Length: 230
Image 1 (cartoon, rainbow, N blue to C red):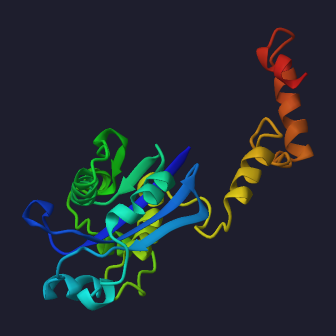
Image 2 (image 1 turned 30 degrees about the vertical axis):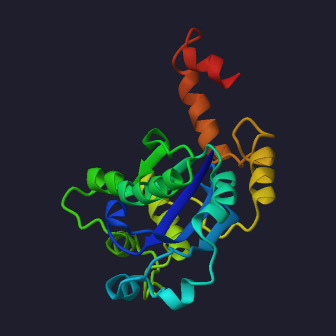
């Protein structure tokens, strides 16, 4: 199962008032494992960046003026996300901006049916909150010390860690480097019925097994447990 953990940065809070995207970051998960594949771009918003927004993400109008506009990166971005499920924190914000940009260039919108909103997951699991990305990192012991300002790619990486905690806990660290390695892991794990590359050694000692067999023998010839021992 392929999922894309995604985040954006913008010039403001509402695309309906003329605000635009300035950054997109996304990382690929395969069966909840990071593959090492990612997508990242800065975007020229074709307008000024207010000081309030720059204070949040550190991206100035001067920095963004030579970056590509959304229409130049749209096909590459859409090819990366494909038809995969998108994992986003407070998804209505990011999807609202993405769909506004897609609408400007006459491309179909991203449907909410394909979205997993981690903010909604967090509210269900921790109804008393707080459930911001920083708060969830603190709750789950995820190092976010590099997050001195918001950044789409870094926030996507942090969100991937949070998402795995919200859906049952990290079983494998988020450091697996390449997608080929992930797929090899999936192939190798299918070699045994247990899903492991080799069977685990039995946990029952010979003494415990002998004691169990003696107990079953005392149950009589018709005991169902005798069939389990054969």
